[in-house]
Image 1 (cartoon, one colour):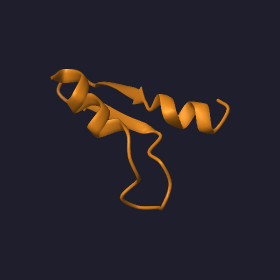
Image 2 (spheres, one colour; image 1 turned 30 degrees about the vertical axis):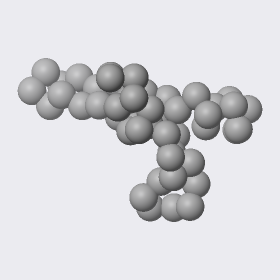
Image 3 (cartoon, helix red, strand yellow; image 1 turned 180 degrees about the vertical axis):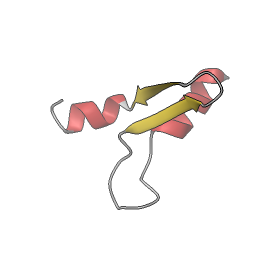
Image 4 (tube, one colour; image 1 turned 180 degrees about the horizontal axis):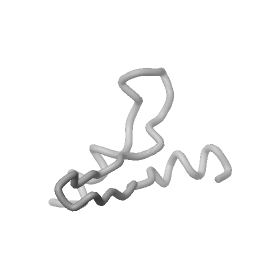
Length: 48
């Protein structure tokens, strides 16, 4: 279940531009912490 939700969030087209999403940033403002989940398809298509 988590994997399906994860794929839905980080994959797909951007809401701002007609390109694939690079990933998503998760932030916790209370602990001043953040991390980014990278879309593997974006990495493969852009040779990164």
